[in-house]
Length: 210
Image 1 (cartoon, rainbow, N blue to C red):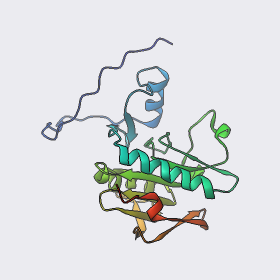
Image 2: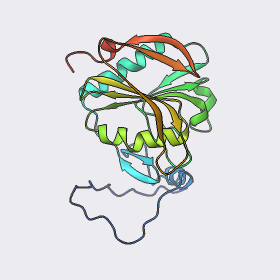
Image 3: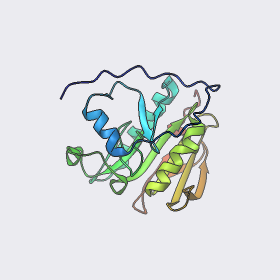
Image 4: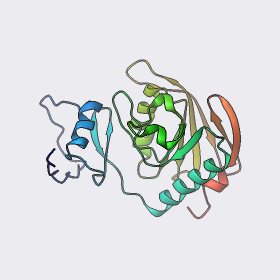
């Protein structure tokens, strides 16, 4: 199959006029087809959120460091039958986000022919600085609609970890019923499939220099 060159994605400025004509959203199937055809590649900084191609924010050093600390901490307490991944696709009915950290059932080799889906995932984590509005809005809605049981939003702006549980999948605005905030002096429970498998000190994930 010939590779089709992808034009450079324009940066959307705040003053850009919103289209008044009908525009279509991409399905997950169309998104995958574009990838298979070479229209989209791993080098394109985008993810599919609710049918829209959304440009991902550039990662700054604190976000990169905290993402690594979270992955390392989770790997230390996970039992057999789960693994940790970072910034890899998670396929839902209408989106394909790439969470900063995700805890997936099974082994990597189980997913040679597909990306993990909501039933394969126990926990998703987004590390937020400039992305805080998106992670509290679109991303949280996507994860709730998909039925992801636990969503951690690691808030670098306020130095806290927001934990969302009990997703509501119905309605126009899916959300989480429970919301708890953990600060630097707290211990953060790690819950997989409704069972607490361990705890992590928040201060270990949010160094004071950040």
